[in-house]
Length: 305
DNA sequence: GTCCAGGTCGCGC
DNA sequence: GCGCGACATGGA
Image (cartoon, rainbow, N blue to C red):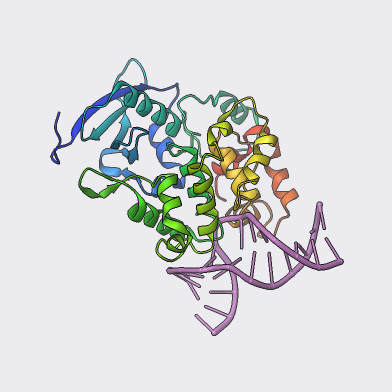
């Protein structure tokens, strides 16, 4: 099938666990507001331009499947040529990663029904928080959330994509998130002054260089046999990743037992649980402690006062 | 102008 | 281990 712009259009289905809430999964976290993610409200579609390992740039459109018998996500891929089997397998892999289709939240739901006095903003099948196709992209996003307003985060990620991302065919508006190689090649001066990363440019560049040169393999961070503590320490080795960013990235990696304590969380907890008085880290942690290894999600879906 | 943002680093103690 | 100033940039 051909689209208007002359691109080839390919559709596949990904099966989801049950229960599964597509819209909550796509939109419950701020990542959906960061390019090249896009939430298309009219069709309830999650879209993202992505560069496959082959170098092919594709546009992904994800929406809730309409099969009655089982729950699926309908995946539409737009690109310049038909996908190879290897590319199709990669599409399937990144869709499952973005939507966390292979994570089990049943223990979290159970805990939620057992704990008294908690009202979380949860519907059946929600609790999943959107991730990027790759951990590299998630780390850059996270670095762009430190010590800046959310509008600044949006601006920096937007500039990274617009200036350094590879376009799909001849469509300059459809750019993938830049590769480590592209960010490394840009250099710190351009990252600081043109992209507007400020002092973060050094952190972003060093990470991109380490990956581009093969000194850092982020695949090792996805190892489920690693303890969360060991993973936390490994994440902290990345320059620019402090306690907040490491806890955020643990969440990305499906480990929710650390709270990412930032000004936002401090303000929320202080208002809701301490009558507006400032609360220490210990006091903050004690609030969500009953949630054990699900603390991050308990905070994330906690209801405002 | 001044303050601070969904923090982190490197320093001195 | 803990406290402190510096850090780029833009919005309030």
